[in-house]
Image (cartoon, rainbow, N blue to C red; front, top):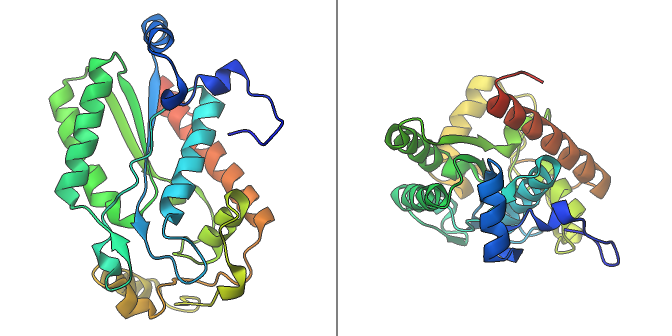
Length: 253
């Protein structure tokens, strides 16, 4: 989470569950009401210029920043998602029911370990049904013992979201060196279209993304910059953090 040569603070080290030690973690959970952040991504095509790990890379970075800012515990990212709509372009997919079951088991395990508050941060559009279904089931089973809230990070920016377009490409430029801008090409451009037409295309894309976009890109990545990506990350982190605190405290910030 820190660049080379930059020292980590104790609060940073407390964030990632992966890096903690059992006695310390159990003591920490016992002494305070902990909040867990669960990032959910996907493995799928993102045009010719972004890696197939894009959704997972972005949501992992977003979740880390939210966890650090709020001193939450960060759960390892669920990297596989529901991406069948990208076929015949490359995707590694699991079913809605599988992802929902994984999330349900994970949250049950967190509850058994004494963590009652959880935020799921979703990084892929195709995961939304599974996340919503799991959240409903867990709240029904929890009987007010646990609090679960799920969000998709792109709902916390002003820019219109895309797929391998300006937004995702800018975010990746800010967090990864694995971006090939010389390969970036415009995809489906919705500027000037009616909301009805965009909705219709979105519905079609949920069944066959390549059929709608041709090259697997929704938007224009060619003008994306690292600076834009950093600004977007700050905007996302700030807005999700506000939502988290409002949900936990019941007070709008």
